[in-house]
Length: 535
Image (cartoon, rainbow, N blue to C red; front, side, top):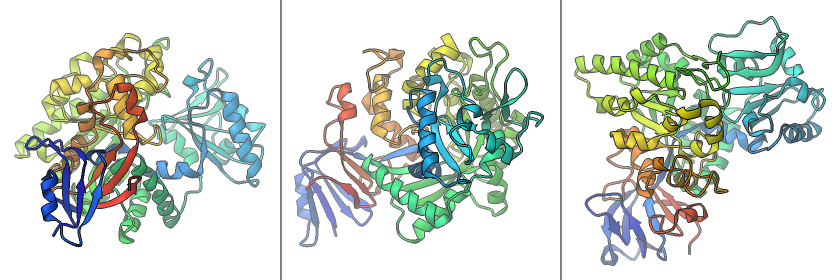
């Protein structure tokens, strides 16, 4: 029986067998037929018929790299995203302090010193005058640095004589005084562990709010990289029948041994919530200038970034996870980090081959691949490693890349290189670092320009632009493959899950400048319209 019939649609199936259609028949959560108006013959008196009035229909879009707890929590935090000056950021914090009770934590995120005049990092002193009675924790846009006030440093025991934790650093001025800037998780956690966190039910409520926004953006699935508290809230939503996104939950390094001890494996779960791979941080980020580099940052001859996890430990964890049935997904931004991770994967691939494990059985990933050395440019494809990238990072970061990486920028944010070499790609946003709106990512991939048109009509390194089709597949078929769900996601075809997005214009037909004006008029997950703007 056909429960729902979509007609008068401009369907791009992404299937080689039948690439175009105008009608889709759905039964329960699955697509049962794809074709034209003749599918009306499948309808019964109980079939719901939706006229899409010519809307473009694509397979549902998936964000292959998102921090879902961070994204949901950001709905209640101080937003410093795109604040153009330090003074305005301090004013935002001051206004929040005026609304808060003494002792309340002021938590926010999104600042980027590189976007401020002068580009200098802020300090605790900048906050002290406006937050005398409140501890402050402000995560940088990159998520790899935090800005705190003096009260917070006292609470956390951060003194001038405190040694840097392994894998992180406490910024100090010329006199050796801690400035209030903490680099990378080991240092940031000196404070983050003190910040009150929402309980499971509260977090689940925030995730529900974020989920509605995700549907409005056309998302039907996410690959999450946050901690077990996020997983708990997701399970709660699933139990309550309120989870309306397909979630792949990756496992951060501190918890992988527990998963292995429980004899869990990649893909455990169902089509709504399933386990992904082992997540490790190899290095930091460009914004904090902690990405691990082969050669120093431009103008900083003593700075090659931070090795968050050393190569030997990465190998030990990846090898153990592989033996237990898990692929790995490793954050690597600088060219040295990418090189080291590829070395690890090369060694582990040899081990897997000796055990009779094919690459398709361990779908290893590198997250970001923001800068790759030319000598490593083909290795992801050769090793069968997925390039999990975020197109909008290129347009957000290009000024920083040029300033700190110079001529090396030609090899940065380069999905074109990976596609041409034959590597599989999966696109995401890294939200809350960037908005979880895939249409913005598609625009960035296709134009290499910001919304305001900068850096010019041709875009930044225009030879690296993707086609619309390549960008769309990066948000559909790439994530489906990375999740091991390519036999039921990423296409509109009989037997596939009825996860769809409807748009008000044809992305393949409009000029690139119109991509950002495109509206999501419908998002369907599991045969149910979760967001709908058409009659």
